[in-house]
Image (cartoon, rainbow over all chains, first blue to last red):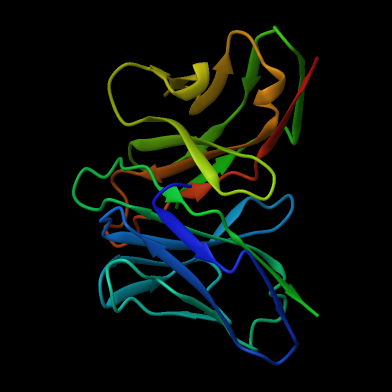
Length: 115
Length: 117
């Protein structure tokens, strides 16, 4: 988990609330990613960013939003439009560039529960 | 499109025995393949990767994986399992020749490895 921090570790949300999950990295990586993990389903990509001020939707972006104003930070907002947000959220980062066999480094995760 | 299949939800092995965790993939070009391990309520830890070259890749904690292009497989192996190897293992793939806008990995659903003492 070294080099990437996620906060909070546990987060509880009431229905109808927006919440923001923090992700910070000090690895000087250009690329950052958000995944959602549900039991038995592996990791699904929500959003990713290859460079500051740019990001792309992943496979399950509906109900989520992100920003990438700084290289080190890639916060994820879970909006009230996300119908089933209870899950384990993982942030990752990697180098970016041509010939990209670069591995991703993961943070420790945030477990979000909707009350 | 790229995809990964891990056909076994769980693998059980006795400590000291060899272990294999299976992974098959599908990409349109050449694959970049990865194995990660996850302990309970933790993030994923990188084990090893195949980019090009030797089909047998060695990684962390004594794990290795064999790339087989004809069978589109990348099985994870270890000669002698430890109880501490018990965890959730994920295979991941990225198409090296895919859409340049899509750099993210596609992960399999995971295989739970249980090593009995």
